[in-house]
Image (cartoon, rainbow, N blue to C red; front, side, top):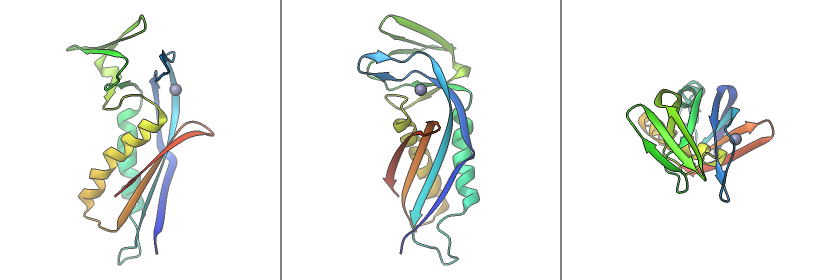
Length: 159
Ligand SMILES: [Zn+2]
């Protein structure tokens, strides 16, 4: 039998700004109050757990804290011109230029700041955290990133 645990929303939140690109356009600068859901599936341990809720929430909160109150920059964008200086991130797209202090920016190793890629980023960060627990009963992780109530993207990966 496979079981699933889920932690969501309460304290799994962050507020951040971004400008996603799509079809040759880039959104105006704006922000969201994001809410995150993390689901982990697997067999039960001898103690009848999939994974400790507390550990799961802590791992998720650590990532939310990293993203909170930042401008999320798609560092690996194929369409935004991005330059890193000692103190700033500079980027240009279709004649619009921006200079943000590094302290206000989280440069993410993703090609676009869509909710889909943010969900994938959470998975990328959580997988090593799970590996470090030594648990070998976990089979898959799903992360949902909600940009606004009723508007969320989900990503799933095997563990
Ligand atoms: Zn947005």
